[in-house]
Image (cartoon, rainbow, N blue to C red; front, side, top):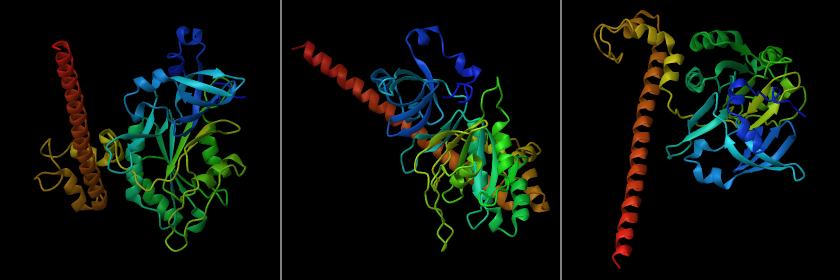
Amino acid sequence: MYSLKDLGWRECFSSQYGAIEADAQFVPARVAEDSREIYRIVSTQGEFVSELSGKFRNEVLGRADFPAVGDWVLARLRENERRATIHRVLNRSSKFTRKIAGRKTEEQIVAANVDVVFLVSSLNREFNPRRIERYLTLAWKSGAKPLIVLNKCDLCETAQDLLRETESTAMGVRVILASAFRGDGIEEIREVLQAGSGKTAAALTAGLIGSSGVGKSSLINAILGTPLQETRSVREADDRGRHATTARQLIVVPGGGVLIDTPGMRELQLWDAGEGIGHAFGEIQELAAQCKFRDCKHESEPGCAVRAAVESGALDAERLESFHKLGREEKFLEAKQDAAVRAAQTKALKGLMKGQKRFYRERNR
């Protein structure tokens, strides 16, 4: 059995759990796994298979309002059956989100209430500084602290060079060289996880995010010291990963800390990431303050401090191009979001007008 502190319960959640909820016999629990709206939750009474209450389901507005792995919920337990009903999701302290894969314009929550995001990349042909920038953008936007793990350093002869390149890209974010096979960096990761643990302190929650095949499952097994997660090798022909983890799940780490494992991502589109772009490209933001024009786009304007830094070699041209690319993607997504909102409003208005016409027709009969 776990205490609420072991599961990461903090004051910001306590303040949302009042006397009314306690009187209604609602118990705080954390979502450990989501399988098509059937949830495995963990509480001080153990694990329960849960579904949503009818009232909750009727009041939910969109996909992002449904429980996600890492969420704290209030549930009514049926201990004899080991089942429960979820009645409410507590306000999140952080959330790592992306646009849902495909054409649909909708937010998908990858992990909720995370304190640290371990951004995992492998030091093989999958290594890509531009992809790391994208992950960092969403990590900064999430409200959690990012930390980069460069896995499979035992397979890379230039690991130290790539470490320095990543540190330059990450602008002050801690980078750990790791090898799940050899054990490099595992103790460092454990220390990060256990930093928030103690007799009175709540356990720290860390989410592992990365592409398929970077070794997240192997890292978790190394951290736990036991083969809990299934692992698969990458394809030798192209170093492409294969999914070992197929569902998000929450794991309580012996000795302190909570891990949220996520399936490998082949597509990571931005979602409301404007603030995150500013954090991930902090040096460009600082240079932009020196531009001649306040609305400088850093393309061909005179007196642009950012372009001057590129020309002098102080700023990598590829990094500026990545900044522009993410900015264009964010603006395109904002336009799609606005269009989706307008379409929903038009649909609701048409429904209201049809309802009014039907009312007057029936009244005049």
